[in-house]
Amino acid sequence: MPIVFGDFTLDELRRQLLRNGEPAHLSPKVFQLLSILAGESPRAVTKADLQDRLWPGTFVTEGSISTLVAELRSALGDDAHEPKYIRTLYGFGYAFTASVHEVAPTPKLSRKPGFGHLTSAAAFGAVAVVLLLALRSTTRSAPPPSSQPIRSIAVLPFDTSGADRGDQHLGVGLADLLITRLTNVRQVIVRPTSAIREFAGHRGDSPEIGRKLNVDAVLEGSIRTTPERIRVTVQLLNVHEREPIWADHFDVKRADMFAIEDNISERVADALAVRLTPNEKKLLAKRYTANPEAYALYIQGRYQNDQVRRSLASFGRERAADLLKKAVEKDPSYALAWAALAGAYAGSAWFGETAPRIAYPKAQAAAERALQLDNSLSEAHMAAGWLRSAWYLDFAGAERELQRALELNPRNTGALNFYGHLLMDVGRFDESLALRRREIELDPLNPAVQWGLAVTYLTARQDDRGIQQALLVLKMDPNFSEAHIGLARVYTLRGEYDKAIAEAREAMRIGSGGSRGLAFLGYALGMSGNKAEARKILEQLTTQQNQPPFLLAIVNVGLGDRDAVFPLLEKAVDDRSQNVALRLKTEPIWEPLRSDPRFQALLRRAHFSG
Image (cartoon, rainbow, N blue to C red; front, side, top):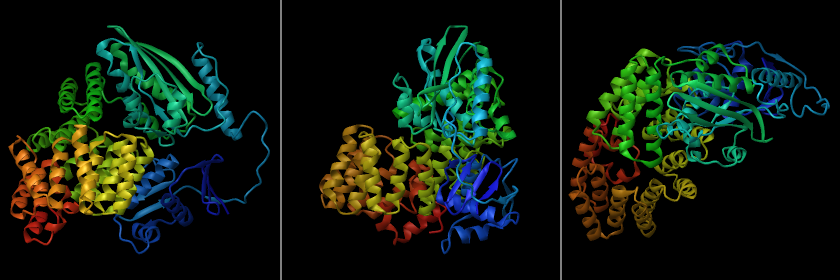
């Protein structure tokens, strides 16, 4: 019979979880975890028992369980710090703490017209929200209650056509800040900033954009500025019914910009009629700085980081780091800005824009400062995990930090991305694929996120799936050069040299592929037997300044020159260049080298066991 706890009904027979009568989405593994914990309640279940029951006959780490528990807590609106449903017994396992009882299934009653799919409690809540909003704002008429609950939302970039030239960053910047805050509301899925970037400057049909993003509601608005004041007009739209749920405007002095973020976040949560835990309320109202200048610099720094992701321009990351550094100078206690600064420095090293030995120590200092100021900050633990893997090659330490980041915020897409990368690098492909898919659930329209899944397939030598996923990425963005490079790599490994050469040339044609496309072209030509052309490419790369040593190593692998490969890889590992150390264990290109004792020594140099 169904089990009832709180607002939820767990129906094992129908494999369904209901909240106030409405279906709540759970992945199959998370549903199985809930069934085990609720069925054993109030007895605690050990981690070993959960591993055996969730993954019989398969070795997985404790991190897999932690990830599932974080996802389950998110779906239930539970809080690890103030648990209502799932209690962690550190060093032992987990216990389901809510009181449960079985109920006999009851036939559905006919519903009175006008309430759609709302239960009476939900209908009352919706009416209460509408009345409250009517009292709050006399400039808008209250819309009828929604017939569907809002379970997902996208915050679109704000229209800045009426803002001063120097305030254009607020369009994406304010949206980004709101997304960060609203992500703390576990009962509602909030699309990440990466999902909404492409709509910056678009004045299209908002409900249509919402349908494209596969959300129930969109938050949109416009920003008007003067040298002294900022005015924001905002509305929350129901995508399915194309009706406003709530609308208002805010007019404040520049020094009171905080109030806009505070008010919009609070009002959106009210309008969605979600029940917030005490910790969610605290996080939703949390201000990370009281300094308006530091706050403004932080918004600009985040905006510059966003521009980097869109244009791949290295100068933008330098500009972002400069702005964030000024933000923490204005307010040295600004933990969120310290975490963002750590990310900007680490990104500069990760993408080869600044020497790792210069950038990574700066990133480490910023991440440590962020954690000292606020150890509950998911972004700070994400940065620390990134550094533990990329700079220190401490894979166990990196996993602990990234798990902690996801416990604090299961929807931290950056942490999901880095953790998925880490698991791929150490050869735990099934776990990596699971995290990649979770990231896609949160950000399905982002080619870079879809590419992460393709990379894991290709690295695991699930070639057919990897090729199919890479082609999907190119369908989304034909100019995504890394997908062409990935196809060049896999086609070379498969001996399909004509296809490989064509893909490498296409990456070079696009432009953003640059030297990487040229190196993989040399690799494909060398493996195909065209050694003369491959040597010309190697000479061309060698004469260019500051080329990463691993690009030269790739061409030399194609030429079969092992003696030239190993010094280049040793230098790349020692310099922490272009993440070569992380990819040594699982990168298929190095397969011909694995039997060489020098490669085993190289693995140990990169802190792998060999």
